[in-house]
Image 1 (spheres, rainbow, N blue to C red):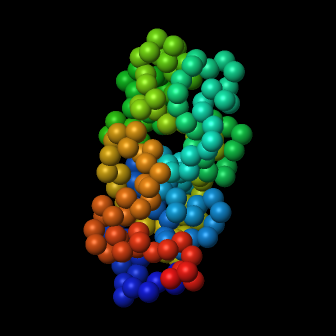
Image 2 (cartoon, rainbow, N blue to C red; image 1 turned 90 degrees about the vertical axis):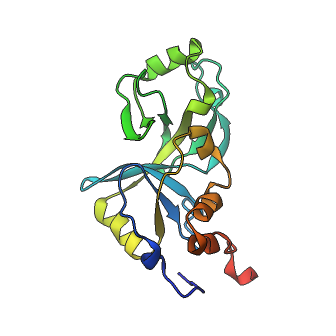
Length: 196
C-alpha cells in the first residue's frame, strides 16, 4: 500500500478476524470485486473463511430474480465472487427461521427458505430485517491471513445489529470514520491517489 501516513494498517489492526467481525478493504485495493468493500465474516476457522460484502448493491430486487417468491421490496447485494449463481441471506429472525446460524448478536445467516417465504407471505418479516446476496466471499485460512499481513484488510467489530443500517452505500467510509481519527484519515483517501 502506498501509505502517506506515518503508521501502517498492521499497527492499527488490533483485532483478529473471527465470525461476526468486519473486513474493511484498505483504501487503495484495486481488486474489482473487493475495492472499498466491507465484508461481514460469517465463518472464520482453519477450514476457511466465508462472508458477504455488505455495501455492493445490485440493480435488482428479490422479486426480479425469483418467480415463486412472495412480493417483497428488498434489494439484492453482490455478496462476493464465489457461487455467483446462488442466493444467500442474513437476517435478525433466528428465533423463527429453523436452521439459522448465528453470526453475532441478533444477526444470523441462512435457514429454512420455505419457512422464510411463508413468514414474508404472512407479513411476519420485513425488508429491514433481512439482506439478500448473490454469491459470497471465501478464502482458505492461510490466504486470508496472508492478505491481512499484506495490509489488504482492516478488521473491525460490527457496530450495529440493525441490518437496515448495514445497507448504507457509504458503509466503507462511515465504518472507518467511527473507528477513530487514524482510521478516519484513511476514509478520506481518494480512490485514485494520482488525482490528489
